[in-house]
Amino acid sequence: MLLVDIAGGITTHQSLLFWQIYFITAPHRWITLILVAADHQKYADRKWTFMGFTLVVVAACLCLRLGSGSLICLGAIDYLWNAWHFASQHHGIFRIYERRSTSSSDARIVRLEKLAFRGFLLYVIARVAGWGWPDGGLGGQTIAAWLDPAVLVVPGLFIIRQAVRWMRRPRDGFPSFAYLTSMLTLFVAMLAAAHWQQSQLVIQLALASAVFHSLEYMSIVTWSVQKSKSTARLFNAMARTWLLFLLVFVVVIGAGNYLVSRGWFEFWVLINLMVAFLHYGFDGMIWKAPRQRPAVAGSGAS
Image 1 (cartoon, helix red, strand yellow):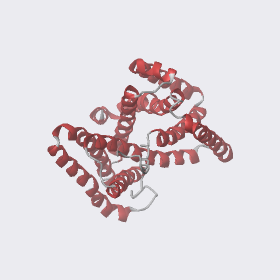
Image 2 (image 1 turned 120 degrees about the horizontal axis):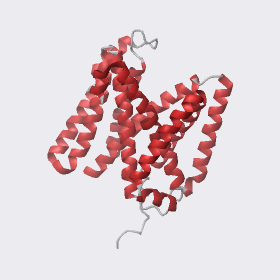
Image 3 (image 1 turned 90 degrees about the vertical axis):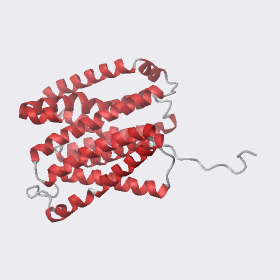
């Protein structure tokens, strides 16, 4: 896709942007709401948390829109929250691969890796947003000049470690190595483009990153649905014909978003900002691994 974007020029980029916004990014956000609603039994113990969060998001968005008279403030919040969401999702999916291929690591090491992994992704997103650019208006040029090559230590160490694990366990180690390498390569490319101030390439890579992020989310949702043991009737009906449901869902959400945006653009943006915030928040609740409960004294094998 990136090669097509680069070779095709501005017309091709605009076409890809159209499909990315309406038929890739929008559905991947809306699907989270469907998952929570359809599999309501799974989240019954947190029903009021989900409902309360939804009310807070809707009320806050309406207040900010009516109070400021524009969507600029909400757009800024969306960018910052989306940056954290990007970093969290990529790290979370990497951890899924890790748990399936390696034994549990020391908790302190896991926390340190989490900090380094997400920190690197957030740094790249900040550079793509304009921090460190001479004409970006955000300052930081001097710091970014030496920090850009320094932070490359993080992806380098992660890739080397995963390569070693892959060589030790060829069958189990390859998926995590392949995912990590492809994702970090994309972010390193974005950092390099920002460092050398190749604005057009930054835009093209950012589009590729958005598509990568959305498609990997839809993939992990598909994986989760297919292995789910939910007893919710609606969820089971969806799961039995999941690929067909997903195809119809993408078409309906994409076409619906396009039609609404043509006639009521600001309303469409506001609704999708609300959905985006719900997507970010719900993701943090439904995908978080449950904490291990301490063993009760005397409950072990005698």
